[in-house]
Length: 201
Image 1 (cartoon, rainbow, N blue to C red):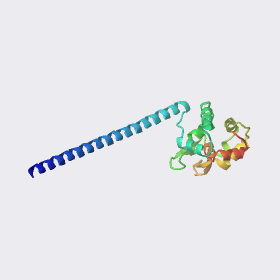
Image 2: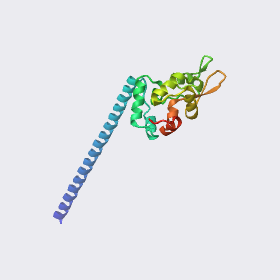
Image 3: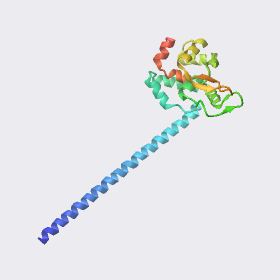
Image 4: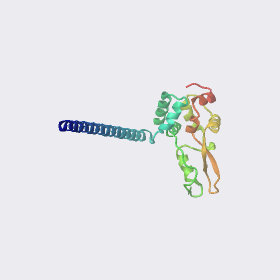
């Protein structure tokens, strides 16, 4: 009887040790997997940071990845995006505006002197403007992007229909003026642009 008890105890201890060893192995495997996952996340972050630093060096700003993804979903191709990037490198301000997709808050940032809000000033610097400020230069840049002749009248009509991006205060009297963005206009999708200008690109 004592012998049987001893054997049973030894079996129990052996099974217990085996179970402990299995648990230790499982925990070690989990820890290794966790560290690998963490390293992958760090690597992604490093790659993202490097890419954004390179974009600032090449273009002077960071490209809005989410907006580019939206453009691709709305009908633009990767070749279209690469074309915008090349045009942006060559100094096309509208291409830069599309890639950056810049926007500002409309309130809460004060005024510069007695002219306009600081947010409006920031918007101007990024090419977002009231409709009256869009002119020949911008029409020519859009021509460069689309490869078709575009009049200032046609440009303004296009922006009025598709490009309004909020408003800004443009005087101390809190007058509000609508501002327009080419990125906003392009966010409506490639087909809308094709139909408006009746062209294929």
